[in-house]
Image 1 (cartoon, rainbow, N blue to C red):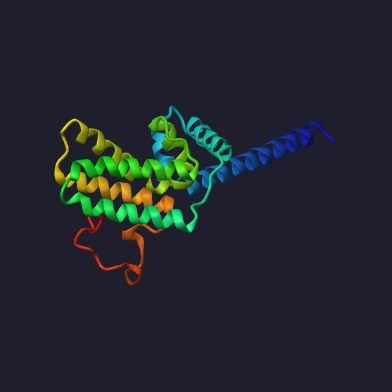
Image 2: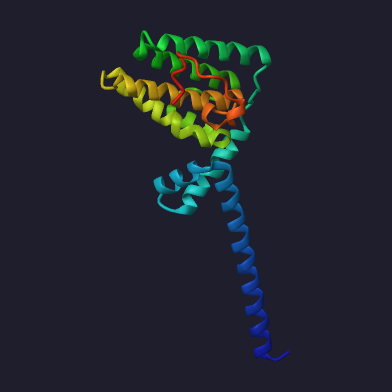
Length: 197
């Protein structure tokens, strides 16, 4: 084989290796986007580079794999559903207090499922692996709850906080959020259902 042929073969091999590497990276990126949904874009925006963001998301997956998550038994699921219904009824008389109660109920559910409940950002990171599509709701609810504690949230914002908490709550229970169920599966709106729009 002539030196020119050797160079051509080496270049072809390098191009093939580069194409395979690019395909692997693209496949991993698609898998992360599929798993994390809108959380993928949020982490990319927060990090210095896409590579750093993807390392963060893979690290979340690794830490998540170490958790001992447990599904709820039917009795626990029914107990939480009843507690949520009771919470919605109380909203009419005490919206500010109800938002705090919603946060506590969601935190109890998170803990019972096996997720850590300490630092909010750690909690978000762990939840993002399986519940990324409802995390924006949870962040928004948390922000309104904090503003409520400072006396800065309106009643409409408090209602929105309960709606936001409900999205993650339903996701953790394994239910479809109310607005995502097909119309034929929705129950009629209750006069106390603050999650209806």
